[in-house]
Length: 86
Image (cartoon, rainbow, N blue to C red; front, top):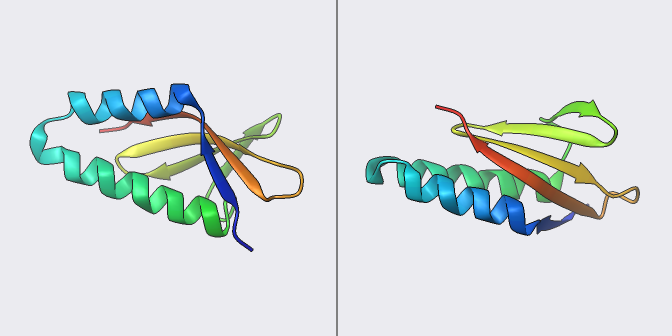
């Protein structure tokens, strides 16, 4: 089953800021990680994620860590935050 992915505006802004702040030589790894995260979240969002609390999950796709929640019917994943982890 495939889930739809919604990136909240704050998460999109964080990802854009990360991309702008990393050295140009690292931008490809940020883009690749974001694409890998999208694929993982769309196919089985919690398979490689860690449950934190109150519906919040964490997925590490180096060099990014994404925080997200999953709808009850598991049809929608909402990315709430993204951080860069060196």
